[in-house]
Image (cartoon, rainbow, N blue to C red; front, side, top):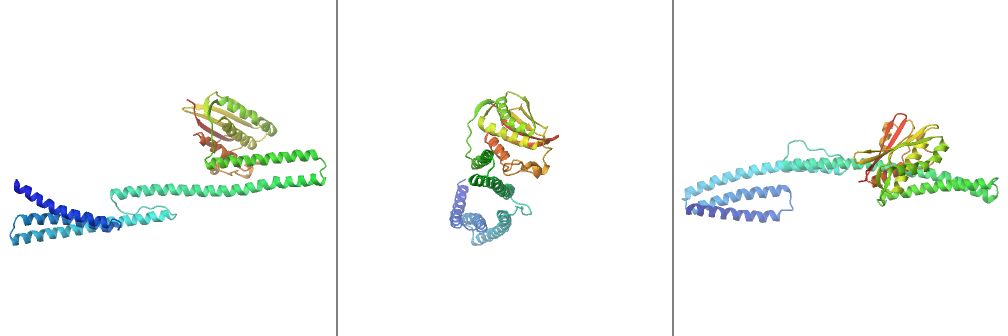
Length: 369
């Protein structure tokens, strides 16, 4: 028993010395490539085995011939082990280099394509993470391009929408100044109308900028959906009468919600104005509210004839106005973008879908407890 413990002690001492030396070398080359680190690890493993075996052989007082035989056998085994470790290490490094090249490609704006061939579990997991990140980056790039296109369209439309009323205001002001206005009172009323129109546009821009900047603050309070819809219908009734459109709100239930009454009234008002402007005379705009599980769904259905399927995903984009037939006589396409921003600030969602004869805008909000 004593001999076994002595042999174990010599083997441990030899292997420990080699291990400590290898740890020091590995620390010195920790900033080098993976090839160098794998080579050091393989060399340390083989050297530790070799040092432990030779230490035990020396302690056993073998004859010079036997000691030489043991040394040769262990050295050959060490060389084979070291060569095998290096070959396998090169395969791992080659796979990691291919993975690095693939990652560099999608980092430069391309898409990630996993290298062919089998890989270790760690590299396979890293490949999966890079593929998921590539998909997220691709979606982010598409959103960025879409937002940039929307911004360009918005700037162009705002410039056009501002130029027309400003030119009219200037012409009317000059006519009044020169005393050329046959009916100054009418000119004053028209100027006020145009100023109110411009004020509404600037207000929408300010609201949208707060939404995009994340500075929109809401003050939720418990309120009935019935009251919200009633206020919105009262505000939209004059516009509906002007366009000859019937407003219907008979299917509204008195469901409580925790929302900012002012902001949600603006949401419903924007939806109703949008629906009235796109519904032909003698058409109907219907408002409904119902409870579904833990949510409250407000809907506004118009008679616009429907939205093309390819445009359904863009309806709530900033500056979107749709086809020429759906382009309103005023506004910059901000109303529905504001609707989505306010609804999402309430942890809800805004959606649109086509129905028979028109489309239905739905606002889903969490129900009050």
